[in-house]
Length: 394
Image 1: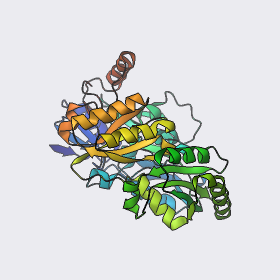
Image 2: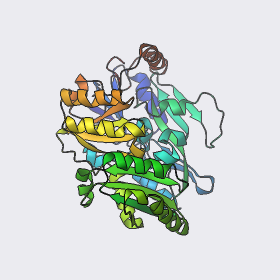
Image 3: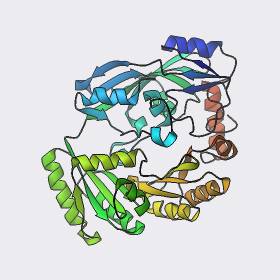
Image 4: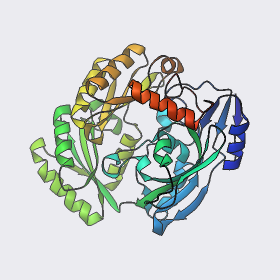
């Protein structure tokens, strides 16, 4: 397959406008095993369309080309004591990708980490985008301030579109100061039901929890813990973190004795949760990401375990990360459990044969499916951008 590597938005527009065959749009290629396999004659890689173009720390704004590695952006922000708000996961180990995760790939997949429960999703912090639609036309939406009124909010539309509507070339995001300190309140040995009750109580407290997860014993073992862990993170100024963790520990005393893990140990734990490093996911298995009401996460986890999968809970129980057999039977069991719980799923990783044979996201109801087709036709009238990546028919 030919790989096209434009260096700027004009080159992207020229390539898309002049092509007559489907194109696989990608950044660093780290998410190639995600969703459905794309049947395309060539690959349009944004990896060479990279670089930070604006960084105004006092304005909390950063703009970069879509192919800019997320790690490069994070390093630039760290130098000024700031960070990407949504705490994006790095799935390079999980996906066995060879490249680097990029800003465009992050926004196109709308992936968010543990801080999603307190700070919102990645799409909530996208201020503006420049992109090329399927007709080769350059489009722009948003700007460099939070409250902008520059036409239709295409930023929200393109975030999570997985490159099926347009090729993003430049993205502006809002950033914020990184916390001075962090610590975690850790309750060992709870059952899943007790863990979710503890997470719920903590999230309803006034102590500003920014991470709430439950690791069954199998997941906890991957961070050298001898028993299941229920973990709650607090981030802020050092004095505030000390006060709030102690208060939260006292409030959760009915669930048993809690330890407080300091900054270094806490950061290591949450990085493993964020990046799914606590998930036992050998290369031949499939990985699912299920979103449900926090009170139903344990139901999905139990059903998955019955189907031979294993996982853990994040987002207070509302995010279930699972790894299991890469079979249609296991996929059917897990997606049925998600539907019973009123949730949705993404087949985050799997062999191409499985991803081509099953629904990788929940099928849409007819009215919504018709709207999706209309949007696709308006943005990509020739159907050449990542065809079939999300739904088989478009």
